[in-house]
Length: 306
Ligand SMILES: C[S@@+](CC[C@H](N)C(=O)[O-])C[C@H]1O[C@@H](n2cnc3c(N)ncnc32)[C@H](O)[C@@H]1O
Image (cartoon, rainbow, N blue to C red; front, side):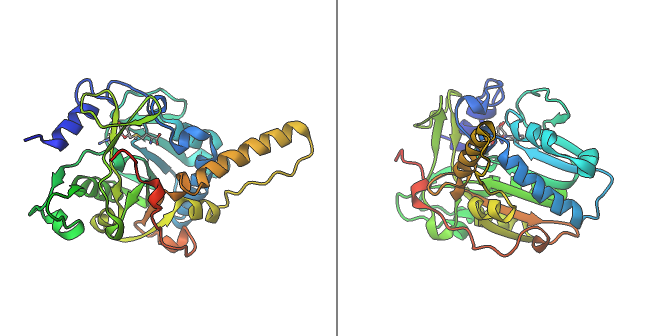
């Protein structure tokens, strides 16, 4: 019988796996850090709130977990200013080769940190068992009960990964991803190659991904957390677009920026991503975000290959 998790792991992370051989995610799919620096700007606002709640420690970390090509790390390093910039340590964590970005440390495994850890589209790339029901798997029994012949992706490996990521940071940990909760489960395994969604093939030729079970990941990590939409979180962090300048060059730049922000907030697109935010140590979720509506899935954002 095919061991899906093992096949998935070796296709992405084996000796010549998709990510480990240095394949740049940017060549195959468009994530928010690749659109521009606007996500980094919003995350710096969040980091500033974490920093404030921690009492402005001498060194404050921004950890980019599953950093890919390091685009988010590089933008955070470049945009940081003032006292935060002087105390800021930016670390990209990935199994992929170090892209050698100025001011960005690169490691292949998590280290303890004090500040903000962001896992942008990391959890969806963690291989997990793909099973057909019925099954006596305890994770499925708790989070995704299966009927005869139904398929599911078992979230336990993502839960364990997220629990250790949250435990590694004093401050806050944020997973930004596409996902589902118990009331809207659906199998979502799919592949991406050269910018197109393709059938998942376990030969290292494409990225393989499945939506994240946000509710089980949150429960596994424990502590205080919220799950909100990217659209609402960006507004709460002050990322808004306005086009006001009458100078033609400034107008062009403002218009382009407004377009990038609209893409990050789009209904049926990146705006529907979930932000699973955990506060750790002395920090409280209420130090970081105002009360926001709970994240709801948009059926239009599920993959369409089935
Ligand atoms: C879908 S890509 C996202 C890249 C980037 N964060 C972005 O949004 O553009 C997932 C990344 O997670 C990395 N990754 C997966 N498991 C990892 C692990 N256990 N440790 C470090 N990096 C990991 C992969 O190598 C890959 O670069």
